[in-house]
Image (cartoon, rainbow, N blue to C red):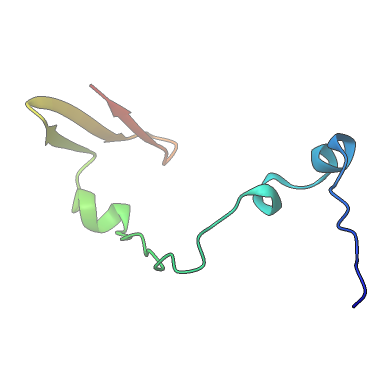
Length: 72
């Protein structure tokens, strides 16, 4: 029976790797899909939308430059 040694990466090697390669994920983790909705569908032609969340109001506004801003 032959033995092999396991070499662990050095700290400098870990820092040079992308963070995504360092994360450990369970093998049986279910794939999660994020729901997507177009801002045009959400705003329905308007420039502002009020979203209520846990008793607070948030305003989603479409700027003149076509950007979205969410404020409380």
